[in-house]
Length: 119
Length: 119
DNA sequence: GGGCTATTTCAGCCTTGACTTATATAAGCG
DNA sequence: CGCTTATATAAGTCAAGGCTGAAATAGCCC
Image (cartoon, rainbow over all chains, first blue to last red):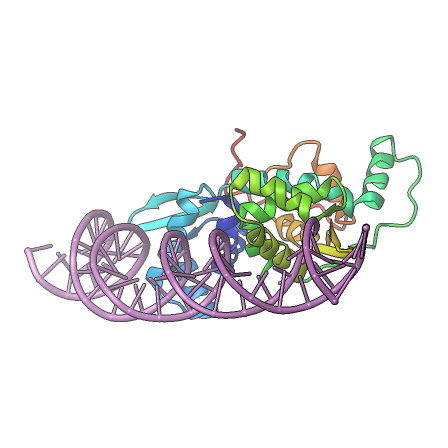
């Protein structure tokens, strides 16, 4: 399953968001997702399996619990793919970045251009 | 259709890659993709429709031709989603650019639970 | 107008994958 | 040990969406 297919599912995206805050047992993830999406525990477990097998998450056993954590490698791959399109929107920011990298001689208006939906 | 669902299809990703090099008529895209994936011209047209309707591409008529181009807005949205995971792999220099893009609001440490593996 | 080219739309098939319920595995605990 | 908790797997159903061939739309050129 390709990285983008994995991220295509809203439940899986949500799970990754949850794991981004730190390691969590399957049960906790399951309960949150269950509450938010109204799906069963096995459904969540299947999503965790996909995340595991596609490399987005790692698992660690703690007694009967399974602690899941984000593995960023595939996300990085996604980010790399986006790379070629970044020029389409980051001209302003890139310019500023260059300026900063050159020594940040003068700091002018902060880049307040960015907006974005907060999930 | 969610942005990630759109990108979930390899044909659509390829089309976006093609368009990243500049505006192209549907026919040219169609022919390339047809050669690479072995699917029919209507199939490509349907993918173009998805890209159009989901905001990833814009069209412009030129006689009987349709010139397609990338619209970066949804890609930006995807990039924004990735934002929260960037801390997992950007402890290096590229953290600068990312942080700068965020407006350098705050210095946030990635979840200390786990270090991202360096492949 | 008639025919050619470029592209989209339609209708139907068929695969994929997300879900459910039921069941299996396995660790903790009395 | 058996009961309970935590999680995974199995089997089967169902809908979404990607594909095809056929037909529709529309500009172009004689």
